[in-house]
Picture 1 (cartoon, rainbow, N blue to C red):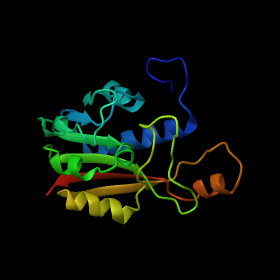
Picture 2 (picture 1 turned 90 degrees about the vertical axis):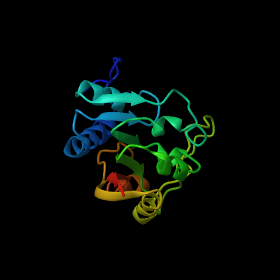
Picture 3 (picture 1 turned 90 degrees about the horizontal axis):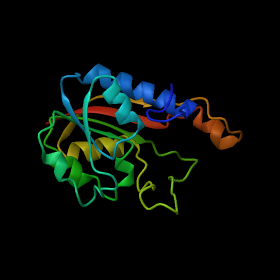
Length: 181
């Protein structure tokens, strides 16, 4: 599997995560539904389009903490794949979504590792890494009912050490399909 528009192959972890995400999406969302994918065009949204989904992305470098008007537009589904953790406060956005369906994935908080933080790029930081119950509480308070969920371990990290070993044993990703209450 190669990256859309690139000669570079995906990493093993990207391939596994994208396949699991796409399978989960196919189990819950029809290809006839329109999707607003939060975040700029990315590898996963290109794969979704190639698989027959009608996907619109938010503009590049849109700060969704301040500018989330697009979620109030007429889309059947909003997807948020590993983006909510980059927001200081995802609650206002989640409570403003007009669509009746939401599919979102987040990294789970790991007791043995700090949240990811890129000092060089203010858009590439995790303000939150969620526990399952925290994420459910946030979604519930924003008016969403979790209908289906999965946790994933992505095996195959090519690093040696205690943390990579623990990551091969501990679920790292959490995905939910929600419907508006």
